[in-house]
Image (cartoon, rainbow, N blue to C red):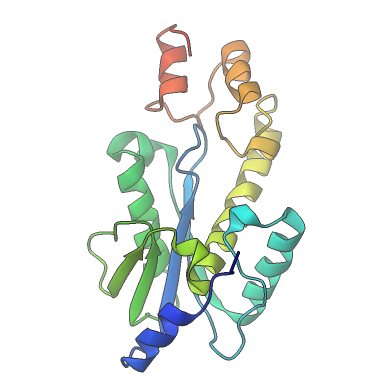
Length: 207
C-alpha cells in the first residue's frame, strides 16, 4: 500500500500557494478526554520519511516521526474540552479544535488541507477537505501523528490522576475494560456525558 505523498501540496504550490498546512484531529470516538487537532506546515525540502496515517504506525515509529516533525516543521496543537464536546456535539467540537490549530500557527498558511469531508466554518484561509486525507496527503499525515501523540500523552497523564480506567492504554476509547470500569468506579470530570455509554450509566441503563 502506498504512503501519503506531497502531490496535493505540489499542485497547490504550482497554483501559487506558498504555505500549505495539513490538519487532522483525534479522539472523536472516545468517551473520555478532549478532542485534539494539529496543524502542520511541512518544509517541502525536508519532509520526514515514512509519514503515514498515525493509526497505521507503531508507537515507536510515531514517536520517531513526531520528533522529526518537531525538528523540521511548523505546527500547532489545539483542543476542544469535554464540556465543549457535550455542549456543541463532537462534530462541531472537532471542527473547532481544527480551527484553533490553524489559527495558532505562527505563520499563516495560504491554503489548508483538512482530513475529512468538512472544513471548519470561519477559517480565514482557503481550504479543501479530503476524505481519508491522512492516507493521501503528507501534511495531513504529519498532523495526524502530532495530534495522536499529544492526545495519548494527555490521556496517560489523566490515567495517573484517575486510575482504574486504563486510559494510558485505551486513550479514552470505549473498550470493554473502560466500560466495565465506569460501571464499577463511576464517571470522572473527563467523561463525555453526551456519549451513549456514559449517558446510559448516569441513567442506570445497560450498555
